[in-house]
Image (tube, rainbow over all chains, first blue to last red; front, side):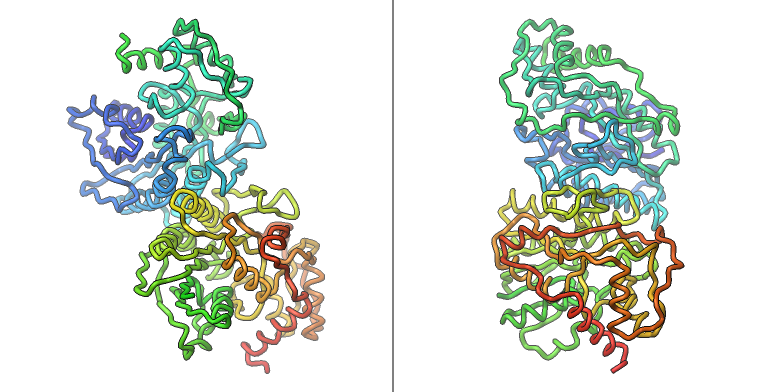
Length: 319
Length: 319
């Protein structure tokens, strides 16, 4: 297939490029580098099946060659208000990527009669009142809250995609992506995995918000990409959760990273929990992915963390 | 003030035109007539303070004269899937009005350093799990459900407006409008008030979905417009509910209409409740409007219905 992928220079986007190329497809990557990183694509520069267009998806997209699939992954994605790459500091850009960007990519897919796949998010569940989250749960989101630029843009995109599917016959798919980690995450975007690993590699104590008993369920990026690829090949049009349902407390997670990196600096509990804007708990129900896509995560947390730590060491010039 | 009003030919829009003109303002009405009705503006054609631009708000808006306020009311607004004017039959138009239309009107307001007011809706609360609904309630909305084209467009607009307010200093206001009735509603858009009155005036039994015990709280249009006008003059930037908190069962409501119109044909219970897509109950908490705007509804249901029935008789050439 000839596939256009927006957000190609992002953490997830660049891994998806790799998988699509490995499967023998031709990939046109698109990014405006607001939060994407050129380094994530450097290894593809000489690949004859890969080309790149620098473009903002909120502007009309014209691609001359016939496309077989369009994947819309472009958006700021870190919730951290302390990072310049966090969506709280890019509110209008985030809202444009998840509205104008979704119109433009959907129209492009429709003109090409191409498959369409959208990167939605567990953020559509907001601060959920039900655990684990099944796709039929409607969520608990504050439309005027501090994360609304991201949550509502993603929810809007889902509604728009279903409208194109139901009323225009567009061939659409929606993946709701849960917390994911792996190589090529931005070290400086304030998300917990790169923050912890960076602190550990520098021999600093890991910063814990509150008591650390809040849980996360982290999916290793290769598992996530495999689920997305299976969804792309499927004919499922309603949203599908992809994520790892195994929950770990932030505390256990931090201790594991200190052990794997040999960091003896311990933990730093001095930060108030209220400064953490993340929900207390979020965990995917992946029954639909299991039955529709025969997918489930395969890489355990320890294995995934070892690979990630190794890649971060390389990035930091530590090996 | 010189005020641009989108959706000017709609039920609410045309009443707002009247009020703004009565207050001495200059009004530029805008509508694309997808669901708006020319007849609603005929009485303003010779008013020197009123002008009209036929335009789709999802296209860039250019207005040469300096504006003091921009009010964005353009959107299909009937949930009825059986009506060609219902938003389930205009999904993409509805999603555009509540995204591209909101971007365009916000940008216009910002360029003019004008006040901005957005017509949001009780639909942002979805099928609410709390009664009555206060503005801090996050709502219960299905992002991929049959009403999502409207609900998510309005929620997206709220998030976008707060982003413009918080990050760009735009001078914004958001009104969450609850069920409203009065003259100039489309007789054929499937909403309960025009449907009941039309059936009653034709001597037909009124169609009740289910047992009729589901409640509604209906606000007379003049009251609603007064609340919106007060909000426009205020400096309140967070959403404010405007609606009538007095609840009536659909059954009582139908009986009242039969009595006021002298309709002896009674009620028709043969329709399955499940065909009614409206939530079981929705009722505004108007504490914020009371304290911030010194506003509350003044027109009782019987008085409001008499005026509305009289206007419908005129429209149908029955007096």
